[in-house]
Length: 149
Ligand code: DQA
Image 1 (cartoon, helix red, strand yellow):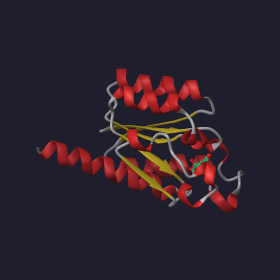
Image 2 (image 1 turned 90 degrees about the vertical axis):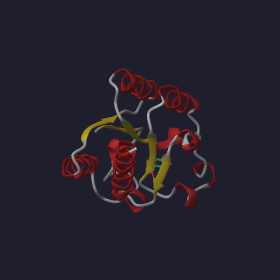
Image 3 (image 1 turned 45 degrees about the vertical axis):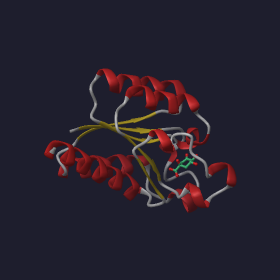
């Protein structure tokens, strides 16, 4: 199974940015965590990070042409207002899981909404790195169920 993980703006600053919210682990540690968990679960993973909305949209379109099986996306602050990323997700018809390190539902009012949730098959939030692990588990189970049909 081929899974693309997309991380949006400021996630490269993990370990430095607001450690009380996002923890002290670095972005490199997040990448290693996802890679190691994917390897043990026989998943081929590509991990992409960008601080630019258009680059994230290009990557979503590329996933369509490369026949990626599933996507995990943490769009950072774009979660709350990027209709362009939302439209890209709904254009490509690839099962996509939304993830967040923090629980956006328990934070500032402006942060509580997600414009991508309803074009995603599932959302995991508030469990730091484990949110990504939950997303990988969800997608590998989904594939197993589809193969059994
Ligand atoms: C985040 C939550 C967003 O509100 C924020 O802008 C981020 C990170 C999270 O993973 O908790 O950049 O997506």
